[in-house]
Image (cartoon, rainbow, N blue to C red; front, side, top):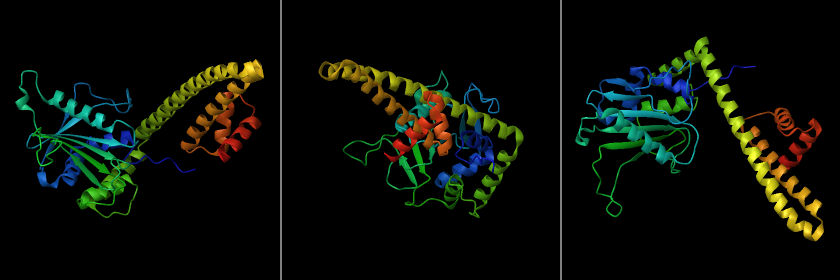
Length: 307
């Protein structure tokens, strides 16, 4: 069985790549060639992270700011899941840049120009453009822009429209696991990512993080399923009581419980399938989670999959 390959969109891989200042410079120049950036340095936040120990590899976390030779600041992030609240996430990172770069004694006039940049493995705006850029504009007069000196850039790995640099196109190819782009930046990134996959210590960190995230997702599902069952039973009892007055109290309760349980099993089955699990593995997990016989779990799988 082939080893799992961790690509550029993996959280740890992306962070390791961005720890190297030469990569930061090349990537920023690919996105913003008009700025003519010649040098960058990483400004670590006040709480450095041990990636190999991965003390906290989940949620919103702000690790380092990139500063260029003209004292402009950048935060570059990778976003894989198309979740609600992307705008608020961008706002959070923008506020973090301001907090980290403005000293307590400084006036807000000292705020530097800043860029929050998200590489998205999905189309964040649904317009098939490869790059979206946002600023503050007046609602009625779109020519009137508020001079906040802040910029938001969203890069769409699935986009086909709009002009971008060959280097940014190469980065997008790396995101999409296209290994045939001859651009020097693409070749360099692929080689570096391959090295991380082959390094035993880093691979162990990658596998440990993957296991931890899977366990957390599974725990979240189990908790959600339990809540769903409880809600289903409660609703079933209420519906059963009403129906029971007409057709029999016990029969109504049983029907309500059964409907709630089927909904919970359906949710779990969908989750396991979305994880890419094979049918036999899904059946085994259903059997274990809901204390079903193997045959009963298989029957649920067959019936609910057909639906």
